Amino acid sequence: MKNRLKVLRAERNWSQADLAERLDVSRQSVNAIEIGKYDPSLPLAFKIARLFGQTIETLFLDETAQKTKSTRR
Amino acid sequence: MVERRTVRVWTYAAAGIVGGTALFYLPILLIGHPAKHAFPDPARIVEIVVAAILAAAWGMAFAVLAFRNADEFKQEGSRVSWYWGSLIGIAGSVPIYAFILFGGLHWLWPSSPVGKELALAFASGYALPVIMQLMGFVILSLWWRLSKR
Image 1 (cartoon, helix red, strand yellow):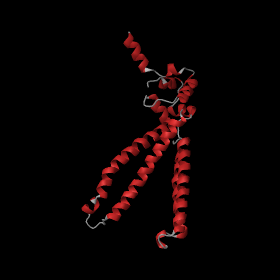
Image 2: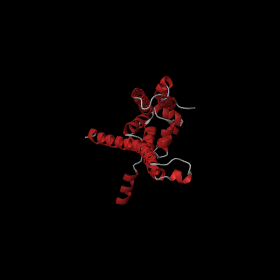
Image 3: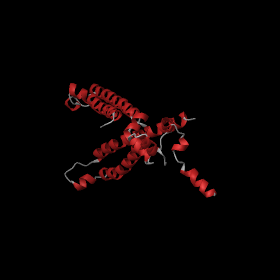
Image 4: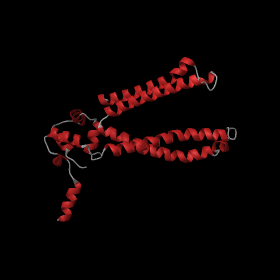
């Protein structure tokens, strides 16, 4: 699932390792989430959202919903 | 630099393997190999089976610790690897099993032993872990369904 994690991380000048430590996950997890190869669990998604002061919907891009919207137009 | 969590997981895994192996071989180190005593010796069999149970329990305990200390991404990786890896491994072993069971090794190396008793022993040795894996899968599947109601 596409997301804005990398952008938000860069805004704060955090490395993947920094973010991983703040979330208590491995750096590989952060990398996998950023490149869309792994979708975090709900608890982790909420943790990420709280850390960045955002909602899950603004962090993670729901491609299915976006496709449905464009089809309806 | 390796993360602390990763070091912790590796430590648990190593402790499980090393400790489990030591527990399994302890009776053999203390009392000698069963083959050196009268065979079959019930007392030796009981001692070694008890050691095997302790070794398996030790290994399982540390496997659980290692899994729980991994983050969700690595846990998911473990689940996927074990599920598909086991499936592929078992599927791959079937033709090898058939080849050996019906004398394939003897065909390639005529000097290697062959016979009905040997085939039966080989079949038993192959079937045991496969059946136990399938039983474990069935039991956990049932538990999963019942516990999520």
